[in-house]
Amino acid sequence: MASNNPEVEKEFRFFRVYKGGRVELFRPTCEKIPASDDPVTGVRSKDVIISSEPPVSARIFLPRVTNPTQKFPLLFYIHGGGFSMMSAFSPHYHEFCSTVAAKAGVVVVSVEYGLFPSRPIPACYEDSWAALQWVAGHVNGNGSDQWLNQYADFSKVFIGGDSAGGNISHTLAFRVGSVGLPGVKVVGVLLVHPYFGGTEDDQMWLFMCPTNGGLKDPRLKPPPADLARLGCERLLIFVAENDHLNVVGKNYYNELKKSGWGGEAEIVENLGEEHCFHLHDSSNEKAVEVVDKFVAFIRQA
Image (cartoon, rainbow, N blue to C red; front, top):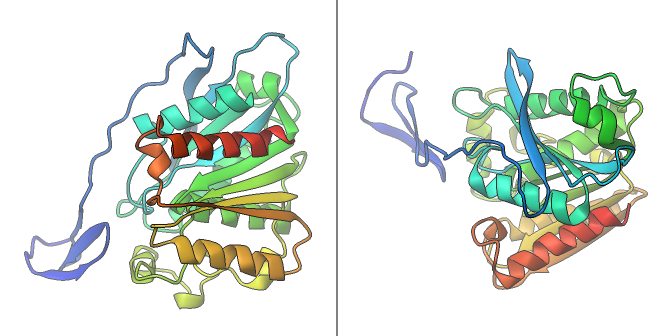
């Protein structure tokens, strides 16, 4: 049990660590809103429990259904928050996923994964992989969720996330390419201002992951062999000009292009913008451009 020693031992972007091991998050709480139906767009949402031990859940968004035999592409979405905060149930992520579901005509499964410090890394990676496997368990129409059984088109699956969620999305695409996901075709991956190694935040990630492999850990700095095995056909990456992660996003794109991966990659730079700006003011013209580009990528399926 961590002591109450007031002396600070380490301080990172999102938290400080006191001698004795106690961790203080700078943003410890996150507002959460219930699932709901949107009468304007027709998007419905609900929450599902994927696992009780470890605790993993998700919010599913279903676009307006006009035909009972209708099938929609599926987006598996992983929220950001520095591996230590935010939630799939927060207003920002609820609005974003609901908007994408409406505009793209896509079922969205937004995963709620374990966060540091209560569940250190690699919980976020393992929970997200377990949730993706749970989604894939509906491919034959006999899974536990009726929306996925009835409406999801598993030949048109996308994986996406922002910031830490972008990093997790990469690891999922690598696992799909390495071990497969039976019955599921991952068409594309979307990384919005993703986190990778190469900034002052590296030490924070290493601290959050006690079992880390150092600065060359493949989750922190994906090697060419991992990039070459991404299990998707297309990849879209966004970087923001004024984001401290701008350079690592560009590095990822350049390394991917050189890796021998056989897919099609595109990079979009949000000029004059900060990290994940699109989540904080969705009416902003440039935020709308991000969402529209995100949606267009999915609609190409």
